[in-house]
Image (cartoon, rainbow, N blue to C red; front, side):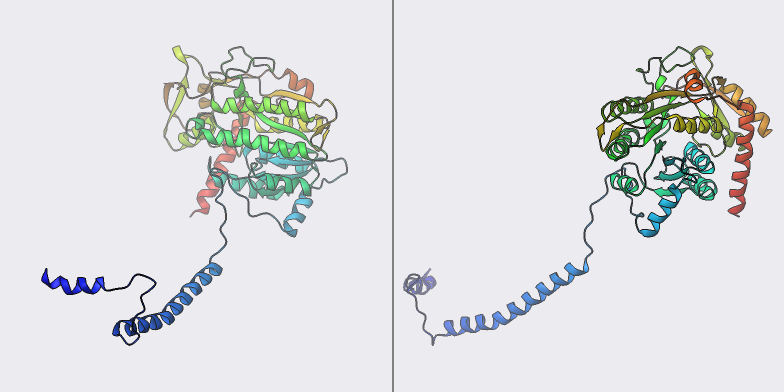
Length: 439
């Protein structure tokens, strides 16, 4: 305690703030004066280095880009004079009476076949596809290289949700028709990825309709609905007048929603719209998720296949419709579509609105399908009969095509055995060629 007294007495003698004037000759003043003077240039040097680093990294770093919305593919590969020239060339019909058609889902099964048929008869065609990975993307790319490119159809890789791209295409080309086939297909996949059906079948469809209705000369629209909209309807054959308010799957619900949305745009904006309800389309270059396709694959690989049946051993049957018949129906729907009556989003009169079945009107059981494949492949299938799960499938589809005959002059030309013969030939040729190319 006695040691602290000198220190405390010294503190008591310090004047209050503002009155204190240190003795310039004191060591205290000299020490702090020198410390201040020597630290100032150091602070200046380090501040300069720090600011230089900030400026350096600012100019070195690339500009930030917004992250794309989840689930959508952004389109960055379009634009430029060469790109525009190729679009205009592909869109030009051979004669003044030909159509100019935008085909969405062009690398899909129906889209590729329909685009080639349009181009071969002299129409101008521009294709749009996002090449998603719902099934083997190499098959889609093969359709492009072996069907579309050879026919002279220019394909734009992009998404129907990309409004900027769609408006760009409509600025470049005066489309007379849109054949809208882009969609998230498949009944069972909806239980795995339901949001993909909303993005494509509803959001994408509305986005396309918005661009079409805002165009100065609105094109007529032909689009793919589905036989799935008949859902739990038990009255056969299915007629366009039957109820469609009991969907059995999310896929069916989105297609039914599409029909109602289409009607609204027809009523409000004067868009000419024809919806085609396709019934189980099959044939060469088909979809790997369809039963005839994966049955063929598994039978050849000697794998067991599951054959569904209904309660009490009820028959499961489908109205299998060959791709060429569907394509003829699509082209006829384009040819008979009346012009839209709107202009720049303003309706000027009542416009055509149609919903039409396209089917074979001859359902075949799954057991019969498998027996035909066994005969064509010359391989006995390893079959397991199981009860059809509650995953959105329905027991039977059967099209009434009376309206298609009247409106489109539609008629089926291919029975299932002949159609499967063509499919099997393509399948063996295609996958044999792929196998050889991988050696």
